[in-house]
Amino acid sequence: MKKSNLICIANIGKPRGLKGEFYINSFCSPPENILEYKKHILCNDHNIEFDYIKKNNSKFLAKIKDINNIDDIKRFTNINLYIPSTSLPELPSDEIYWHDLVGMTVIGINKNEILGEVKEVNNFGATNCLVIKPMNESVDDKERLIPFIKETFIKLIDKKEKILKVNWQSDY
Image 1: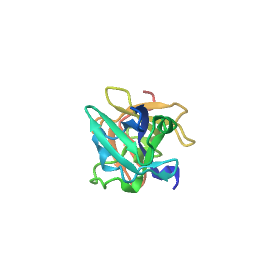
Image 2: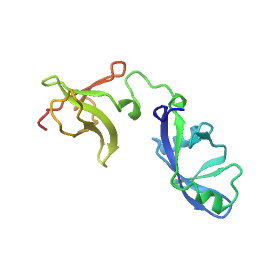
Image 3: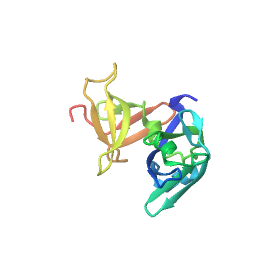
Image 4: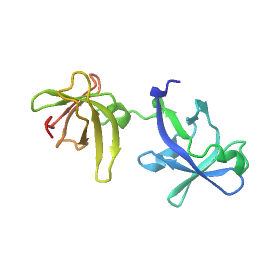
């Protein structure tokens, strides 16, 4: 499966105990959604069969089938886990997954200028921010951070045309 069709939802954390159990770091929102995807998880383009993924206080513990000792699971530490994007539930028309924003052309509505394209979405604490990288058609060569705040800065998301219209000046 192409890497572009995969969504990183977690990575394998440090081992716990001696029998192959490990912590799993969920990147899902909310983190408990990791429990919904355990039958679809891929690691290095191979399906992983879990004995279990369970919540333990504020963390998640997991065990991969047929890995029964600490030495075998240590080889997997920090490896990312993915699901096919087709495993995600369909969203209402006014919502979008973060990964669908990547690659969208960003247009400033004030002067109808192309500011660039969405490179990634990051959370810097206070809010999620779009990282906008310049492209050939961009008004300049600046990389920008635009807070993802609907109605204030994000005015229109056109999933079909892959266009994001923002209330953002090119000289910000």
